[in-house]
Image (cartoon, rainbow, N blue to C red; front, top):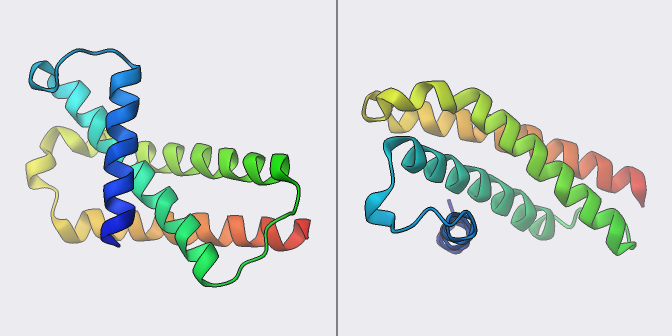
Length: 124
């Protein structure tokens, strides 16, 4: 994953944590840490999709509200897919291999990219 995308995803996940007003990072429960991790993964996938749309020259609508709607739909899809695929597996996170995590993330990314690219092309 691109370092810039990962850094931005981490900042956004930290921002979401601050917005939730859960207190100090050191006092987070196991469930809150798992939620933070999932939020980071979601933000990472979204960032990668958006970066690749720009790199590949995928057209998006000229209407700002239509682009915002597309981004909201992307977030909803990625969040639902990520939480659906990983939430139940995080109790044994230490047993989840990098390869297993990468396979899930790559599948969600590829599906999300295809959906956004198709929606963007259809709207232009």
